[in-house]
Length: 252
Image 1 (cartoon, helix red, strand yellow):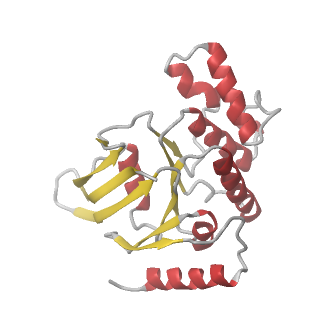
Image 2 (image 1 turned 135 degrees about the horizontal axis):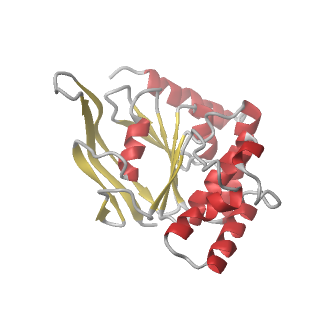
């Protein structure tokens, strides 16, 4: 497998408008992601995980360091990346189908190709029959499925998922974790998944990047050598949960 995403010595400091106060949220963050790997960035709340994802997405500029995708430096948002947000950001005036096809439409794909791809990914996420439903008529889990289908439909090199199931109830969250793994097994993608939920991280990840408190840097990289499907009550699962929780609770 080859490296598709490289995060090199990323630091980020936010400064207010008159430069009298600043806050460093990331410091010298470095790791890489291989093609078709599911990497989870895990750490305590407010440690800068979303800021890091926004830098990878090209929505924020790093203070120092750089991000490269396929050896090309990221300087702005681009079609090689797609983001699935925690707050389900669908266009409320568009149907599920129209939301999914939107990125292809603005890139001037012909109507037949858009229809083929949008229906393919709606079917992939289990929304066959809901193509003409507006977001207001969909449950939280169904809305997030639309978001995932929309991201896949852009055909990105890297999928960026910012706590995508954090706003869902516990039962739906478990269901969506299983759905993500099913979808990923059907159509491989390189995924960077942000969460502060240790069980979620262990359940979906090939590898976990454990972050420190803010200003955040990489504390450990943990390879999860457990086949899917995983059991949350398995002894190895529980032992890893204990070890990673202890890492996060350590003080630098």
